[in-house]
View 1 (cartoon, one colour):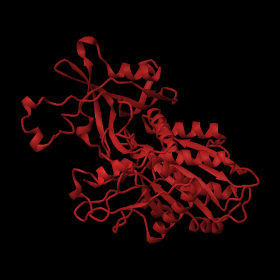
View 2 (tube, one colour):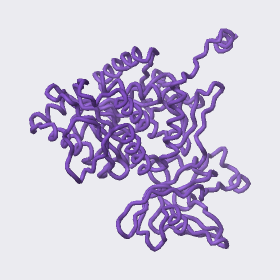
View 3 (cartoon, one colour):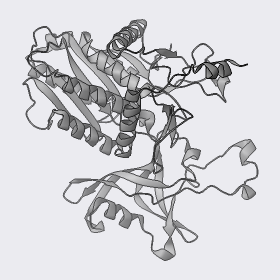
View 4 (cartoon, rainbow, N blue to C red):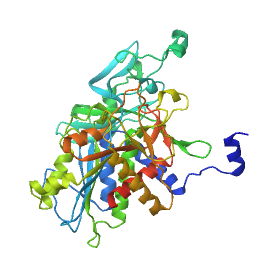
Length: 452
């Protein structure tokens, strides 16, 4: 009898806690409401405003009164709490993530056609698994700018599909793999020319504008298949944009918990300033006004410090007392490709948050950072009455390592940074996969990080 059969006889299987199920369902709703980075950032602002945070216009006067605040810059969002008592502040406690995901962006001149099919011209965004985008119904979402410069959030609904070539005309596809020419073979079909299919009209309708009023857009492809909890015990989640809306959502839920706990009240003593930041453009290098390599986080931290009455010396002291958790997807061990993973570091789904480590500093984690994550995991475990295990990921030596906002934040600001995340499979696919317990544990870890 196998170990699995013995466990089945004993009923010795882990169940998904009700709190984790509720968190997973909220994650599903958040992802469905966030087809683009602009929608995701808007969701963060709207939910935190509902929880009691004041919405800040960064073009206006920066607030200095104690309380919770949130702001949006295009496809990025930042939230923070200004403590009532400021004299003993030691630094900032930052949880960073990103709102964008790989896919296809609609080009400025979108109309395309071939042999009677109406199509849409797209550009590959980030390191997408291109084959995963074939044979599925796609929508386009993001922002549309009108003649007055006003932004309109828009989503088209399922209007497009990239059909594969039939196996009869591509006999070697199963042995040689699907190979797509990025320019010629990834253009989605949106209808038939004889029916008058027009992507420009579709975008205008989605934005509730006349086509003559549209000047430009930032639109990205989205899978329209709803997220689904699956597995024999509901322990798995298939969902688009888990990289990295899972981490955005976990930090959002944790920040909402801070507000629900009354951490903005005069009776609460915080020794650090909690900060949540969800950057844009991580998938394309972060070198933008809303990316981790840009000025967004330093702008916010500096203005917070000034509002607290800090001079340059005191601001630098706060920086050195700060820590950032860079929360992004982690590679879970793949059951069909075990040899592609480092033998001693094979994260499992639903086995806890993953500390990501790389000798060449593609991840920013140090030994001190590892110890800090283990410490807060223990503290969070005691608070929720359930053990939160912690795993580690290191790439195999023959595999190049991806990177995150972590090294960028550490380099840009000189703030100690730890790379963590929830284990997943199919990363950068149009539809990724994770466990249903890990997102909740990641949220509890983030919550503890801000108050511990």
